Image (tube, each protein chain N blue to C red):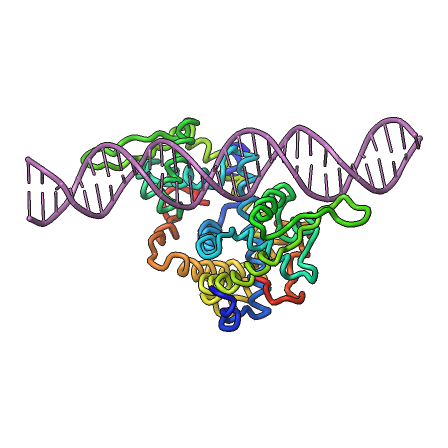
Length: 175
Length: 175
DNA sequence: CGGTCGATGTTGTCGCTACAACCGTAGCGA
DNA sequence: TCGCTACGGTTGTAGCGACAACATCGACCG
């Protein structure tokens, strides 16, 4: 990692640099903007929302902790903390899995489901306003492919690939 | 924000949803991956690196705090904390601006400059590995345009637009 | 059986960010 | 000259995520 590498590292072309600078800005600003809307209007984090939303999409309104962690691109410790807080707020409950298993199941409560139902429209509007409505249909498709390629690098083994295309499940509360 | 809005909110089409789900995953995973590489190899966060890098690109290796905040898409309180920590590590110093001004100038130290020089190649390699090398040249250009459109929504007034295309300055340490 | 290993979660601690409150100074009008 | 306001910046606090240490339970192997 010495400065000698300066000579041997392929630098960024102007086009690459220009694209990267803009993407980096989006990476810094967009999560905060999404979080701000959800916190202001619904008192939850974007991550909280993902957890509740995923639970709402299952038939039983419940899921194993480790599956939830994988589907949210998260880690078990982080999820455990988040679920603990959501449980204190009465939006879900934890229960040991029935049968011979040491796993924990997170169940969405009625209040939690209602919260998702109340929160989803505003969130969708925000996603539209900040992202999708800014793009042409062709750009939306290009964004799909680009994101897919990058995910391939971020997650070479496809460990969390199941997260993608979960939207063919029953309930219409996907985003 | 009642559930009645469910009826009146334009929902996401399958293509939109699929693109958004993937982008959301990138938003969650990519910043962490970038941070991890820089923390592991260089002991700085991605944000720290942006600050040091921007300073290294100026002729005087110095900049006003408020300009630095704008160029990093950040806030003054956040920057103040970060600069305080970097100052304690000897990578930069703060000094009141000369003349009649209440502003503060952050100066990169020699150690700070050297740190950027040592760190840049590894960071560029990571950006290539995770993003640019995963894309075709056409996709890089498309990413440029897409990010630009989204930034237009995130920052309607162009308050931080100057951040874009700063790379025509002197030093070659932009990313 | 006994012991080790791996998988599943939880907890504790530390560092960073958001937010709000605060301070000092310049500019400006009465 | 006296405020008043706006700007530039710092500090304090609370909350969240990363990471590591710690349980616990099942499985496998001798």
